[in-house]
Length: 260
Image (tube, rainbow, N blue to C red; front, side, top):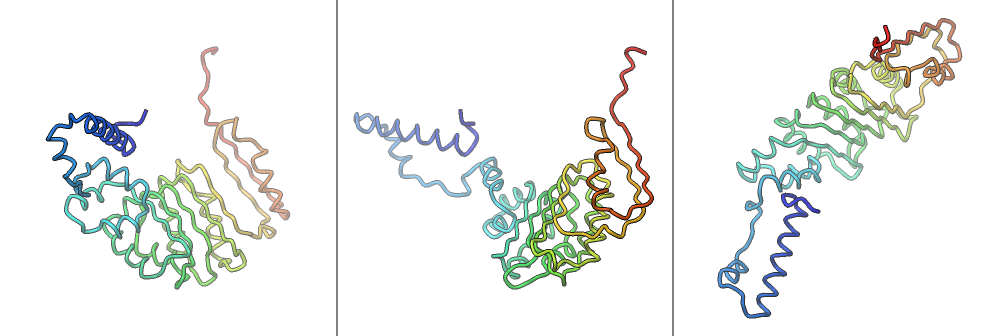
């Protein structure tokens, strides 16, 4: 059954009301107050805050700011209370990014998800642009694609190190040969050593040369059901020249002392 406070629930209630009015009209029993209600118009401002919250869940930050920014004080207040998701695709242009960036000035802390294509219609340095202007301190989900060789990821990597509640990080360079080699190295190191206790998924979809690695120190923390020496085999297959290997496995599972 639909939640009566949701959009679907309200639409269902409205449909039931209309069906009831239609039945009474056919029987000639339609009250005058119902006839008057048919003549009234519902405006956007008549919607409850809960409806606006649900609508904004389906929209990305650029769409929200384009349609609702500076509409009125009530909407502005609601916009300060929602979580924001940024989506930038190849179809966007620099003017749209500048518009988005200007509105993010007072809303950056609300951004929890980013999905950005580095190359758009008329620019190839979107990562540098956004991450140099904004500090996404509450970012949880981050996906970056199509990174041009000319793009420097210094500001991106610097911020990634500070993401305390990062859950998922995905970087997919479809045209891998164009990605800056130094950034590959620093980004790989940063993600493998990331300190976020919330981090559950890391996807680094670009080629990286591990062939020159001769010394490898690994510290793996977790429960026995997840952590074992087998966890590092995939890494060792990439590091053919390793001569010095140090592995430390830490078991965090609670100790059962009932039989002690």
